Length: 249
Image (cartoon, rainbow, N blue to C red):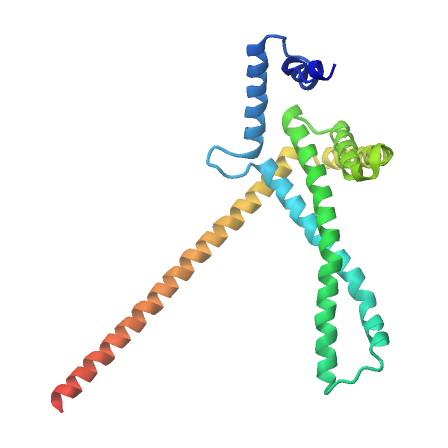
């Protein structure tokens, strides 16, 4: 049974139930799915697509927000705990005590913010990635996208708690995803904006940012070249003056 279950045709039928049983058709179907996934991630010029860039932006924002929340939760209670634990500690100067507390606080912020930031970033990556992929594959955004994304993300996020935890995460994630999809659909309907417009605006923002960085780097190099040329001319002038003074001497 196990060997039969891992048969290539059965695997293709499980993932792609609308494909025929012909081996060539299975390969062509896999190629179509591969091409769609590639087009979803990378443009022809090698840069990320608007959809993939939105997933990256969401993930980075999730990591940053999670790091800030986790770090602030640790930093909020640390000064009082540090003072209570070091009441009998003698320092050569009050600045030494302040320096030690600031260094330990920075360490606590990193310890508290990094795990929380990674967890929230992973959650945002999974949810936004699945939701965006469903939108790119189905060609539309509706409540079903959010529900499926939340269900899959919740199941994967709680898979370390076993089957019951994964099922509970799937149920909770599907409810939250349904709420997200409903609210987002209402906002898009009221504003008259399509999800593709949001992806394109995000892509234009990142393109403008990259262009601004490129322009700043070009201006910086021009300014640096002009300064180096001015220093070269000044040094050359000083050397010529020294040669003339030596000749007169």
